[in-house]
Structure formats: structure tokens, C-alpha cells
Length: 286
Image 1 (cartoon, helix red, strand yellow):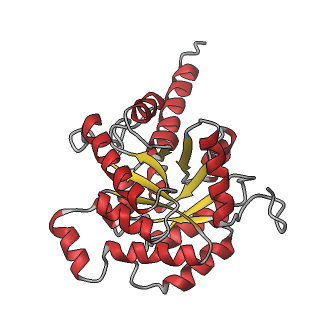
Image 2 (tube, helix red, strand yellow):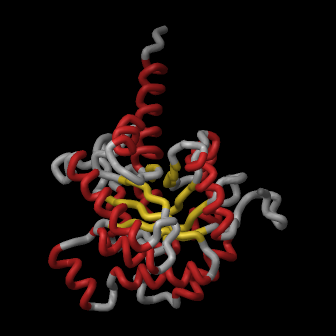
């Protein structure tokens, strides 16, 4: 459905993105959303058939060889980085797939209604709450909550996006957070079960087991179904890394519609293919 101004797909309305995803589910296929930190990643993720492309600041760190959790740190302006990647790398290259902007909703320096207006004008079809404080816990999370940088700010951002006709796909780590997001109008909920395992910069000891990850995912699905049965549910992170992992997750949960891959799609693809291709060149003898 080309945009009448650009001849390309973006931006789509909230309902148009929902209709596209519902068509995937109705055809008994998994929804696959992919993070992209570069234009070339987005180009070939689209060629591979992804249903959504999500831009967030961690993609830039990931594709610079650093752990995705760098996106949670004060190593740059998360909102500005996502907008820059979108404007100059991804939106000019993506032809038809809806592109979603990662928005740091608790950024105290921004008037969120004004910033979301810029996101929409840029041509993004929706928002995602990243960096998200939902994956921070303990003492530091308590400090954030008490000093005006709470998860509720992310919920308020999604509520505003809903009223601005922007599609929203949101990260949550707990059932109660998921319900808050559903009540705010979130279209898709992603059960975030931790940093992705594997590869050169994935976690090992910090990861949860597959059983624990799916138990948490199911709890999130069950809680949201009571609040908004029309929500799409996706899994992300932790031990859910490969296509086989995603198949296993879909088979062992009730109500899961798909998967969001960032490191597991973008980073793993680059690591494996570049390593193997270079080895193949280096095997050439004179």
C-alpha cells in the first residue's frame, strides 16, 4: 500500500499496521519483527520478509560491535540516534514494510507530544518503548521510579501515540506492566525475557532458562488477554535466539503470535556470514 506522497509504504496508520499483522496471523504464520541499526540491515531484512522493522539506539551499538545493553546507558541521546538512523539510513531504503521508532519515553528533556509529532512527520508508522526501564530492576529501578523517570512515563508515551494514530509495539518484563500498556492502547506486547544469548557479545550467566522465559511470557499473555484480547503477543530475548527456539516458544505457549529479533537477526547474521565468508577467502592458496 504505497504512500500517496512518497510512492512507498511508510507511514501507515495504526489500523493499517494492525490489518497487516492480522493477515499474517490469519494465514497461520508467525509475525516476525526485526531490529535494524543500519540501512543495509533494513534492506535485506525487508527482502527476507519481515513484518515490521524497529529502529532503536541499541542497533547502532550492536552494529558497532558492542552489547545491546549499551543502548540503556548514557552513551548518547537515544531519541536522537533513533531518529537519525530512521531519517538517513532506514526510511530512505525500506520500500514497503512498516518502520517503527524506538522512543525513550521517560526522557525528561522532551515534550513528548512534540517529539511524537516529529516521529510521525519523519514517516515512522509507530513507536516502541526503547530504551525501556521495564528491564531494569533492584535499587536503580526504585531510584528511577522515585525521581520522575518511571515506567509510567513510557505508558503515557504509548497513550499519546495511540491518540496520534501511531501503532505501538511495546517491551514489558512483568504482567502488571503489560496490562498498563494494554490499557494505554498498545497494539502489540513483547515479553522481554533478557539480553539475547550467544554470539560474540551475548550473555551466558545473565540469561534465564527457556522454561523460565516461557513461563514469564505466558504470564504476560494471560494478564493482557483479560485487559485487551485484541493485542498481538511476541517474544524477545534471553534463550529465544534461533528459528528453532522461536518454533519451540510458539509450541509451548498459548496465544503467542511471533518474535522480535534484534541481536538474533541482525547481529548473528553479520557475525556468522562475515566470519565464514572471510575464512572462505583465506582458504585460497597461491
